Length: 265
Image 1: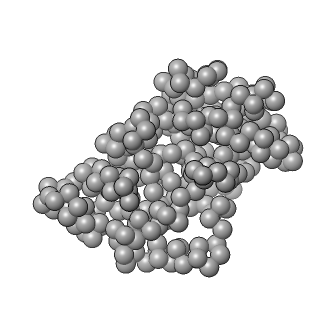
Image 2: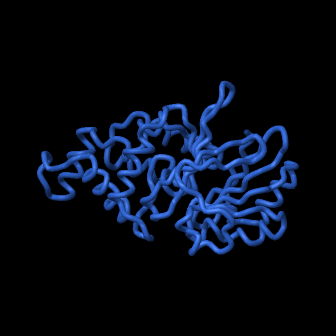
């Protein structure tokens, strides 16, 4: 599978993606907000957009749908429960569906929390290629999606416990926004001695390009504080912030506490 990660460089620092079958060059456009850039990149690469896939209904993910579809005749797919909030959806997706394009197969994951009708698209990988997760606003590099625009942090935590945390370490992640540098600062605010986060922050300060950076689940377990719910320093900090006894905290309450702090950080 060919992957093109395209930074939009707007105020929200969105990413959109083009995925293409190596044999047919048929492509899927994921959340193509900047339709002009999406179409230009596809044309330069010689890829034919057959499908537009939206991870969720927020405008910064669906804003370019109409223009891309008008230019390409692509079919639009999204979560079945988002069909009333995303105009023109041809196919509503549910957990376990296969999204096919050429010889590419992506497995649909139903991942509520950021919104209640959010999907991630999972490429299972092969002997030659690592698996990949196109995760919209569910999972970010070193962070997770916020829940105050139609979501629920308790449900986002369940999504992580049931579907994200069990993923293999070698699963690459392709999120909907580039927030990694700020997210690293939040991790270090909660866990100041996190060596992996400190090292990666230093690399960005020394010129590592955040826009082309690709994390994986194994690295997230080290640098993403939302993966580190059992770390004593993290949990103690949440207990202090919530003014509660440490023994009263479990993973869910720690996750929700972190999300609340991050909202106002």
